Length: 431
Image 1 (cartoon, rainbow, N blue to C red):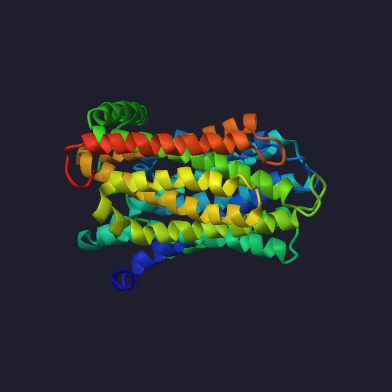
Image 2: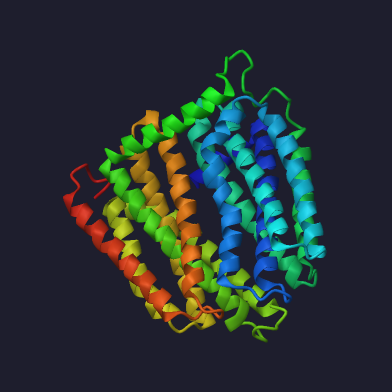
């Protein structure tokens, strides 16, 4: 397989291997930490979890990416990136250990969320730094391949980290604080792994004059506005992003529904159970959803080649419009797990198609800014869905109105994209 061959070539580069090791350890720690937080917020026996609590947790985990992300590069162009990985991961290890202490001490929720927010805020700098450092360890000929394989490997590491957190908890390590400490240990390992690279290896170059930080931040804000204006003139990209935002909202609403079903409706002893069975089902649901993501990565290039990007997005959203009410309205584990696989495939398939449209229709000079805006829309849509679900869902997660509302949104997106597809004259990529 070409992917395996490309990976073998890259792994012969020692500095690439070292940077990839930092990424894998760092993102596996993210997976452990995020699952531990979800288990504490949703499945702790002493907590009567509500959709509002889940919405708050999602805001803590996702909004820093949206607020800090576009501006992280300003500081990353001033700090040695190797030092960002070293001190950033050490800081996250300390903050994660502090989170564990807060769990043990049953601290007020606002202090707990402040600690978790600090960890995820630092994460933005580490992830952006990993992307910015890649051209320093890979030559231009292999950069495209490295850009596709490294984030995929990181996502897989985060998934495996989450699976590890589920496994150790279900195998008897029944302490959320202990699982958070496991994440802290992995953060520390990522920091130590960064020491295998020379301090100056990853840049930035000191001889390049950087603007003052205030001017750089102001320039970033103006650049984002320019990117928004450019996006308004690129209809294929703007339409794809609009559709992706609505689809991400749907996925977020169903995710909160799934969490509440696992916590109450499917647990052994609703409202008083230790949540073990519900947690196992959540882990299984995330696993099958991840399998859907993987299948989407395999079949989307073929599907886009046959149907076009818009055509594949129409097929995905129309399928979801049918499958969501057909499978979710039973509120039974097996049909919902099947739906989780389908929605994983649909969500990742539409995201890959959206990426294709944006990359193909946006000018290169604006592409970075457009993807920063894309990142904001992606995360804000998910958090907004959680907020809406908090208003609609009953405690056990069984809401016919929410499921039907999501199905209607999927259908609206399918019909709208189909209409845009017929009107688009920009070539096969979009039709």
